[in-house]
Amino acid sequence: KILSTYGQLNNSDATMTAELDIWLLITAHPDDESMFFIPTLRNHLLSLDCKNESNDSKNPNIHLLCLSNGDYRDVSDGPVRTKELYKACSLIGIDGSKSSGASSVVVLDDDRLKDGPNEVWNSDLIANTVLERLQTILSSKQQQSTQQQQINVNIITFDQGGVSGHPNHVDVFRGIKHLLDEKCYVVRGDNEKMMARLILKQQADTNGQDNNNNHTEVNLRILTLQTISNPLYKY
Image 1: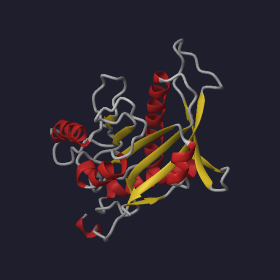
Image 2: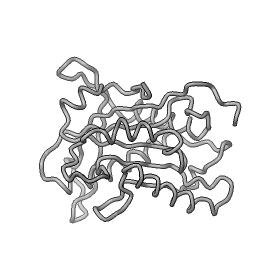
Image 3: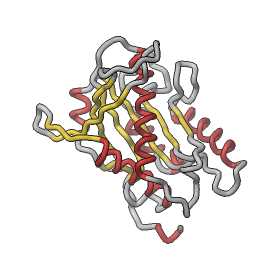
């Protein structure tokens, strides 16, 4: 009961209809993954097969996008906290190396998404940032497979209370809600359940050419970690 579904696609649908499940954890700061999401990642994700045929301890279909490098107190903290995040991901089972292509772990250092309780993160910027990340992941997966696949994207993030109440956490939720509300459309599946769907534009081909068919439609599910109390007074 840790997770609540914000999107419309339920768990049984994802298992039955998808040939590939991609999981993307979206956080605000380095250490969010350890402070809040380790039980979810280990118990809910890493216990799943997720079609990891290599039997590697690090699952190639689990990704993390951290929207800031956590340099609120001092700019020198950013590289240190980023390094700690990569180490934590390695221990959890998320591959942060680039040996097999694009890294599964990305930490942003964007002046528009600065760490701090007085910072306001733009929802449309977050939504577009997530879209770009999903496009990169999708392109990498399709380069590794020539088989046509139905893809389910599962995003895990904070709920509207930000779990701890940090304003940056709340802004992450608002950005993901904006993604769902403004960038997706809803369809009725074969089992009469409503599903959120997202169209992702793939990267240009090897000749640098784009074309009208260079798009992939995926199922989208949003899972949010529930805020148990109201800790907003801390900030």
